[in-house]
Amino acid sequence: MKRVLALITARGGSKRVPGKNLRSLGGRPMIAWSVDVARGIPEICDILVSTDDAAIAAAARDAGALVPWLRPAELASDTASSVDVCLHALDWYERQNEALDGLLLLQPTSPFRRRETVSRGITLFYAQNRRPVVGVSHATSHPLWCFRLDGQAMRPFIEGADLNSRSQDLPAAYVVNGAFYLIDPRDLRKRRTFYSGDMQALLMDDPVEAIDIDTEWDWTVAEAAIRSRHPAE
Picture 1: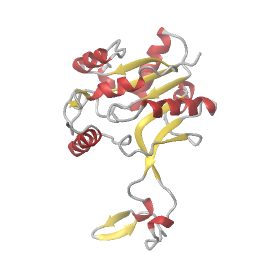
Picture 2: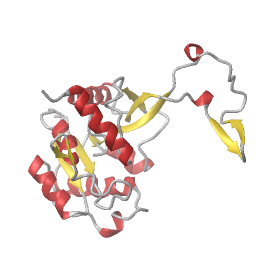
Picture 3: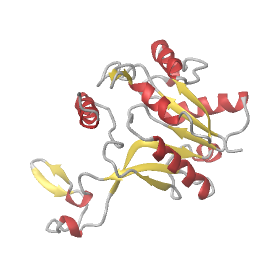
Picture 4: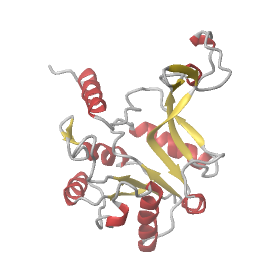
């Protein structure tokens, strides 16, 4: 029997978008989007929310998630490692239940990932002997056209880059979008990172799936995406 724990980490102390996990997006709290997308996927044995905020915990329970405790204060600070937060939840869950095949991190700031995409990532994970899977999207700015500033002078970020290349001649470039991380718990405990040389890409072609809400501008983009797909009648 396949057993993947979906973990949603939702701290209450957001500074750039205050209260974002509870803020209404498309008529429901943002955190509910990530809970909903994991429901009904056969390989997912539970949806666990790790939060330090009682209101977020209540909203997550209302959405159907398991919220057995509030996260310890030392794991709720600005300096707390996301890996430590994941390991805290993972250790608790496996003490209470059987060992897991995979830990699926669904950050609530990526509300538009689709259930079909999550299922595709899980299928890839099992098909490739449980190697880590990370969500990626097409880079909107190609790294060969990026710069660093030396005072007011522009220097190519990648030395030797041909700045005269046509866009259609550049190799495809991808970025981690934060929407999907799946790893074998044994690997996470050993490496203490979701990134490794053997990680696999879960490509998300739809730019809406890659929206990561970290600023008020991101929130504006997210609301526009909802309006564009579900225009008011």
